[in-house]
Length: 343
Image (tube, rainbow, N blue to C red):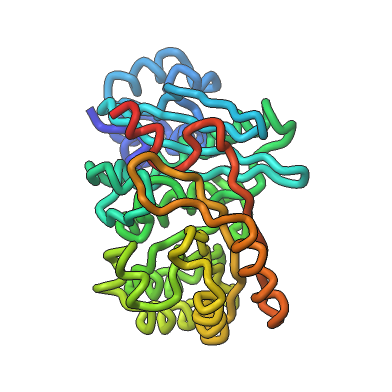
């Protein structure tokens, strides 16, 4: 039986004609799928019972189900979500005074094995479908409304997996999330985070979409970055910077450098100088991130005094930088922690 959410609107219209139903019914169903976020055909109450029965015999609607909910004292909510094949993925809702951010996954596991990431302990089992990414946003939005009193304002593709290694499904999910026929979020509220897949960055630039891009940098020289991120061997920083400049030229959107500070590894003033050098090679903004320590990982969160000295050094040189505090410390908030415990 075919998953009804695999069909485009024209394909739905054709399918309806084949079962003797008018094309406008297909539009109604499409609206239920992507605007009203129906999780079953029976929810489509403006369709007759006879039509719903007919559709149920021909199509299935496979929705992602909430499985585990962890709530932090700081308001962060971590969701473990079950897929139709019983695999587990993760998403996080991060509340702030003026916004609620949903962090979504793009793959089950990950193939990149970055040494500091809990997802790196999980093998990549498969890519997520566009609808499975969309469903994460719907579930996280429900928690944003319940716990923060407002819907999600921002979406970041920073969960499990490398988004640009699931390119087509990630782009299609963004269309569902931003389309007027879908959830209607502004593209400028979407950020895709990548470890640095140069060909994917160029392809995104050519798409003409206006969402944001963040580079998971974490070390500002090839030699040091290769120690913690194998992807740097095939996508060295020079190549990644070229692709990011291409993205900026096409979209006009600055890049965000995501930089986790690790104790004794990348938190020296010499490291800060290398980061400044990269900053001046592409229009960028820097997010300094506090690390959530992960069991089994030797890298640890930088000491507070080193973090403060690092950030001050950047600011004294007129670098656009912010510090992103660690959230959800009392739950499994780091990407992959929950899945590792429940695999």
